[in-house]
Length: 509
Image (cartoon, rainbow, N blue to C red; front, side, top):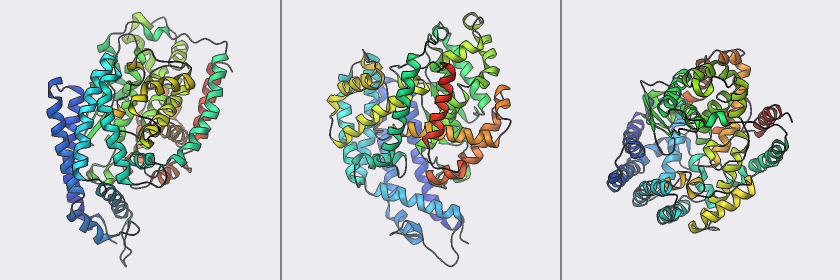
C-alpha cells in the first residue's frame, strides 16, 4: 500500500507554496487591522507579488510532472496499481489535481493583477463605507467585476459563469443545485416572518442598546472565546471594519470583531461567530499543513461552524443560563434588573433589519438571497456595477420591506465584492443548513450536551466537532462528509423545523 511518504516530493512543494500564501495572508490581515492608511498602494504590490509567486509555483511543470506520475489525467484519480494508495494519499492527489487544474487555467499575470486590484479595492471600500458614498467605490468595483467575469471565462462552465466562481468556494456547487434550496427556504421563511409580524407579542430589545463600555465588551467576548476552546496561545482577537478570521497555520489563527457602544450584540455575536471559524482552523491537523488535507473542506462547512456556535449555542437559553450572570456582573448598571427570559427574547427578536451580520436567524437568509441574485446578475452581465445601489434598495424593499437611507447601511455594508469574492454569499446559507444538521447530530451523540451548555462546559462540543469535521481537512467531498456525520447530504428541513419551533415559542404562534 502506498502512503503519503511516497508523495513527499509533491508535498514538499505544496508546503513551500502554502508558506508563500501564508505570508500574503499576514500582510492582508495587517492591512485590515494595523496598517497605516498611507501604506495601501505598496501593500497591494507586496500581496500581488506573493500571490503571483504562489500561483507560478503551483502551475509549474515540476508540479505537473509529479501529478501526472501518480494521477490519471482523464479521471483526476490516483492511478490503479497492484499496491494501490491509502485513503489519505488518494484524497491528497485528487484535491491537488483539482487545485492544479483550476490554477492552470488562470494566467499568472492575471492572478497578479486580480490580487493587486482586490487589495486596492478593499482600501477604497473602507473609505467609501466610512463616508457612505458608493461613488467612491464604484471605479474599483468596476475593475474587480470585470476581472471576475474574465476569471469565470478562464475557468469555464457548462451553464452559468456564476457556476465557475461558486465552485471556488463550494466545490461542485451550481446555480441549478442551489436554486431549489433557496426556493424551499423562501417558501417557508416568508410566511413564518409574516406570522411573527402579525403576532401580538412585542419583544422589547432596548436593553441591548444602552451604553456599554467598549473595552468590557471585547473582554467579555474574549471570555466566551476561551470557554469555547479558542486557544489564545495560537490566536489573537483584534478589531477591524468587518469581522473576519484568517489562518496562517493551525498554530496561528486570528479573529477580529467590531464594537459599538450602544449595540451589545454586534461585538458579542461576532466574537462567537468568528470563534467558530477559528476553532475549525485551529482544529486542522498540523501534520498536513500545506496540503489539501490541512485545509478546510469548503466555505459552506466553515460557515456551518461559525453559525452553529453563534446561533445553535450562542442564542440558546441553555448557554445563557451560565453566561448571563457573568454578563450581568460585567454590566450591572445596564443588566442587573433585566431577567434572563427578557434578555433571551431580546437577542432572538425577529424583525427586518438593514445589516446582514446583525440580522436575526429568521431574516438572515433573505439577506443572502438578495445578494446571490445581485451578484449572479452582475457576473452574467444582466446588471452592471453602476446599477448596484438601485438593485440593492429594490430587493431590500421586496424581501424585507425596508430600504437603507445610506450606502453604508446598504450596498457598502459587506467587504466581499471588494475582495473579489463573488460566489461566496451562497455558502452562508449552506452553512446555516449544515449548522443545524450537525448540532442535531451532536445532541444525539452527546446526551449530556444540554446540561453541559447550562454549566458552561463547551469543550465537549468543540471536541466532537474537531473529531467529526475539523481534523479531516479535505479528505472527503462536502456531500460525503455530511453523510458521514449526519447520514444525509445538506437538507433544509432540520433548519426550517428549528426556526419554526423557536419562533413559534417566542411569539406564541
